[in-house]
Image (cartoon, rainbow, N blue to C red; front, side, top):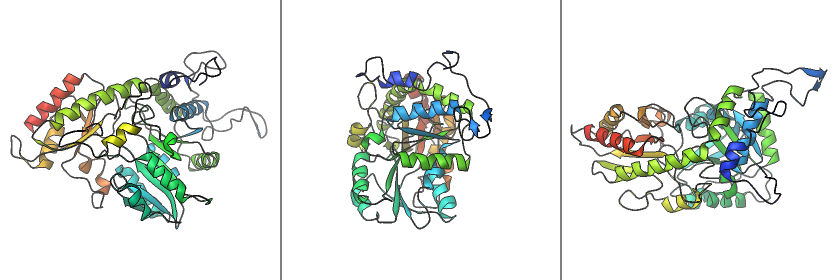
Length: 414
């Protein structure tokens, strides 16, 4: 959004509040109306008013949300879907039969499930999973070929919090596609970071994916997905798929996410600060075997991608490194009851007071889960299988002292 001065660009926090939430054009209402309609009156046969024909194809509330997320990501086009999984399905359609999708080896279980049991099983592209965090370009160079249509990255990843160097991968993918009309496209799932902390398009990505259910909405009261691109042809194809597949969000859901965006930079700063304290607490306990958090730079639990994370994950307002609200850890076996690591993980998750045992993440309230038994059951028999002792924390914005006390007490009892 431009201010009255032509050479001034508003800051991220200003745009988060204003873009897409401008006063209503018709009445001046500061809170724009929700267009809860399924269809629109036309001025004549095949003469829709302002292009509005049917709400699956166009809706003013959805358009406001799409414009807002695109602006915050630094892209030209936003395309909203009924869920992050619906957005995943649309992107996967960019890779047709006989082609290949290269995927990081730590991804949301639903992404793996769709690529394997729906897309590929139905005759679509084959997916190859590699460690893009540790292997990076060397790993990519062994698998990318003329069949590759998409390189799919989560960073930080779900649930191990792996960090991938987006700019490095983008440069490699771009070089491999020189002179090819069907060049590979880099897809970055930015759900864990949000545009408040990381902007993949500026680092060379072609497609940014969000489960807006998480940090963009921020209040655990909506299910929605958003894709952002800058390429006009990609946008046209994705909009066609959005309309043809029909998995579009309702206008009230769009309103909820649009409202959530207005506090995004504030919430992400608090999520990051709280998660950093939680990670430090866990890293300092002898009864914790492993901690995954990109902000841990020193000690036995130092994150291998900490330097990369500090370079590409920075708060949009302060410019300081910020690593989001997700922390994973594995308790060491033993504890007060002499349990296994997996049993301690379950006991911990069932023993917290403030961390609610639930799937999903990114809300203002703190959540806890055991991915192997919950969000990542679909990868249980694959090479992507998750340690049964892994605990995933979505650290909320409550008082950090209360959260730390809750974790310490639950671990002591586990």
